[in-house]
Image 1: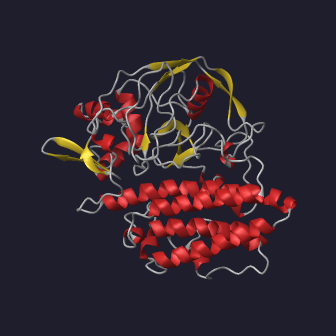
Image 2: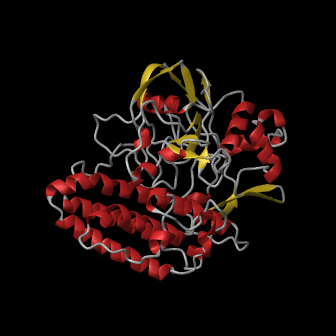
Length: 440
């Protein structure tokens, strides 16, 4: 579903007003397509603190363009609605107070239609602004506008992850979208292969000499020493995870980090999130409905703690983020990701001798803590709060997943979540040899 290039082929690297408006309309329309199957009631529910209602996502990404583009550059700017500045600010302390994140589901008004009006109003104003800007000002603002594109794509993925959790809590097991005909065919896992990587003194991080978007946390590019290592050529499968479960994986404290073992006991973990057992058969809730667990598909919705425990059980480890990035950059991204008609990871294709399932199935946990690269400096102002303030108590994930928007994934992308997060589409790839990360 995602691409492996830094910038999709149909995205210009030098923006002009026509190209910017066209790309703006594409990104904004995709958000509305993702929300279209959902009722107003679906779009208002918040099933846990980490989940935001669909209509909040739609409003927040609109607030982002209104705040970071229109507020400073539109003549005679006035917010669409004064209270929206408070309701739809996510975490930008510089911009003032915001509504409590765990209580977003209490915002029954504005409703879905009012949010749609808000989006339409800001869209018209952004188009008008972009087409009126002189070339020099447009050059300066294009980076902020492009950041808005990628910010909205992040929320497109979150919208799908969040509504999946919302629908999972409904005993009627509602379906977001129907499954393609091939989705119900179970797959068998193939043998796990290994890709040898030489290591040495390597460079990781975004290369500023190349064209293409990047977030600030992908900078600066820097050198790092890697011992020789190898990575599994595909992700861990559901069948392999079931073997871990059958061997007492969730009952053996010696496999777990202390905090992870505490979570297992406090929250009663005995399987990945969204798995339930009926008459001895394991089923999995997906956006396509609830189906028997596919043996050959990648296991997903597991936390860092679970991934670490599995790797320990298997006698292997998780790769560092530098190992993952260097392996993908030096050996090639492997197979093209799945098309966007399936909102769930699928089994790996035939072995190629290289890495498979790099960008289009599951975000992959690494053993690396989310810390700044050497020499990192956040941007000035509110935009500087985008990534840097979260560089503590998080772990890095790499790759992309079946819910990642087209054109959003890239090799240097640093995703991050807390250790216990399970609602993200997260899986794992094993590593061997080399040396584990320090400070994880």
